[in-house]
Image (cartoon, rainbow, N blue to C red; front, side):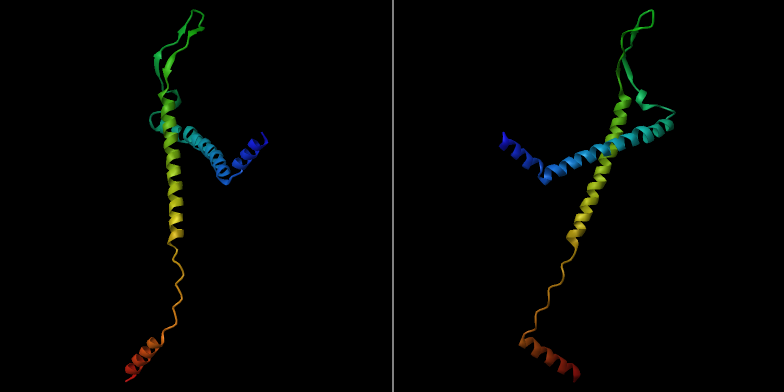
Length: 143
């Protein structure tokens, strides 16, 4: 049992697992922020532009609810809540777009790192033959 716990501890403390856990936590928090943005800011504005529609209330009643004479519900209504589906779809599109922008930014930054030119190699000392040819060239220029 001790060997199992040691193996598990070694696995859990690897950098990849910890990085993944941090990514999942940040992704969850980011998802909540985007959900709030969609539910509380974006969709009410879209609903207002479309004549005051509240997307959360959009549904198709398959079977209406049945009430008795006293008004108590005997069987609840069966509905397809397509308004929630629309909101969740918009939510997904915004999250996917943000992830796309983030990955694109990382790609550009990594390409810039790769494009940094290497420092020029030092020029080697000219050979005796090259020195002699340079002197001849300079003498011919001066004539």
